[in-house]
Image 1 (cartoon, helix red, strand yellow):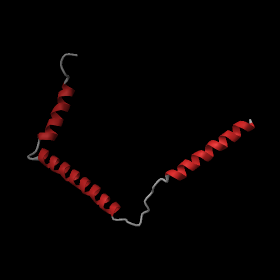
Image 2 (tube, helix red, strand yellow):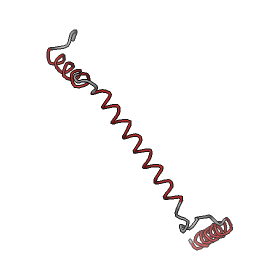
Image 3 (cartoon, one colour):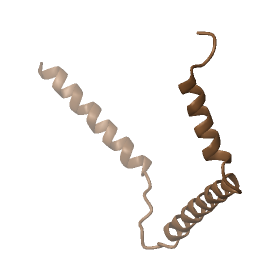
Image 4 (cartoon, one colour):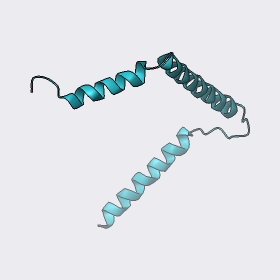
Length: 85
């Protein structure tokens, strides 16, 4: 369990060559990652502006009186059911 075998060193060498083997590969990779992040942020911003631009969507609100009345009716129904049992 002391040292790594030859296959471990071969894999480490292959990964190192892939990352640092060519001129500018790492910087190209980082540039691609940066472009992906920028396009993702742009897509999120586009979604926000299109969602905000839809004024025809109804605004959903809760009417506290209607909710209270429904709760009272449900309580009265459960009392009737308990009295019938």
